[in-house]
Image (cartoon, rainbow, N blue to C red; front, side, top):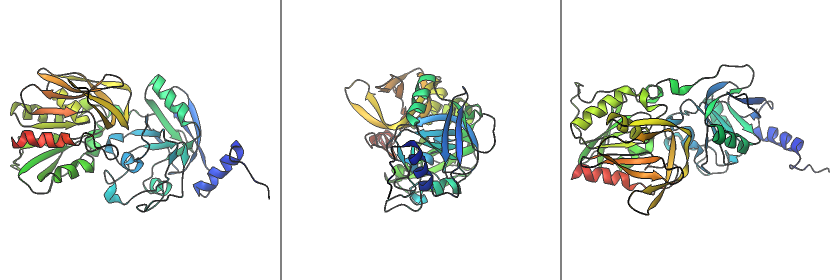
Length: 372
C-alpha cells in the first residue's frame, strides 16, 4: 500500500475535497477591490456574495459570530485555522434566529464535528442558510493584507461574477432590527431594549437580574407612541454598519437624555449614545473583532479582556462625558460615562457570547443606577 503525505499540496487538496463531502470539489475565489485574489474551495452555498471583508481572531465561538447581526453585510475571515470541528448547536444557543454574515472564509474546514451539542456540520448549516463559504489555504496572508490596507470590499465568486457592494452605505440596522414589540420577564424594574441587532444573550443577562425587558424596533419612538410604555431605563444594543445611518435611534436617545432617563449603550449603542449627546464617530482601519481585546479602566491599572465586534468607534466624546475604558492596543475609546447623570456606554460586549465574562458587572452597575 502506498501512503500519501498530507504535507504534499496535491495530496492535501485531494484530502480536503474528500473531507468536504460534496458532490464535487468546486473551486471559487475571494476577490478584493484592490485586485487581490485568493483561490479556494467551496463548502457552503453554491452562490456568490459581496460585502466588506473583515477578520476575527477568536479561537472559538463561530456559531455565535455567524449569528451576530453586527456582521450583517460582511464577509468574515476567521484567523483560527480549524473551523467546524465542534459543529452547530441547536438554534436556542445562537445569538439570533439566522446567519447574518454575507460569506465565510476559513483555512481548514472540518466536516466531521465532535461535540455533544452538535446538531449538524458547519457546511450543511451554511448551505441551508444559503451562505457561500471558501476554504482558503493562507488566511494569514489575507489577514495581514487587511491589517496593512484596511478592511475593504470583496466578493466570493464561484460560477459568475458579481459587482462589489459596500454595506456601510446602507442602513443595516433597519434590516436586522426587530419588527414588533416583545415583552419578557418580570421583576422590580422595566428596561426598554432598543434593538439595533441585539444579541440574544443581552436579554438573557437582563432577565437573570430580575427585570422586565421590553424590546422595541430601532425606529420606535418611545416618547410619541400611543402604546403608553412605562420603563425605568434604556439599553441600546449592538448592531451593524455606520452608526450615523440609525438616525431615528439617535433622535430617541436625544429625547431620553433630555428626560434624564438612565441609559446604557453597548457596542453600536455606545456610538449611538455618543452621537446623540453631541460626540462623533469614525471608521477604524480594520476594526476590533475578537474575544481578547484588552480594555483599561480609566484611573486604575485594571485591564479587562473583552469580546468585541465593530468597525466604527467613538472619536470625539460629547460634552460632560468622561472616558471610561481605553483600548490597550490602539488607544481607541472603549467606553464613556457622564459626569453627573446616569448615562454610560461601552464599546465591548459585557454579555460576551462567546468570550470572557470579565465585564458582566456592567449590567449590575446599570441596574444599580436605576434602583438607586
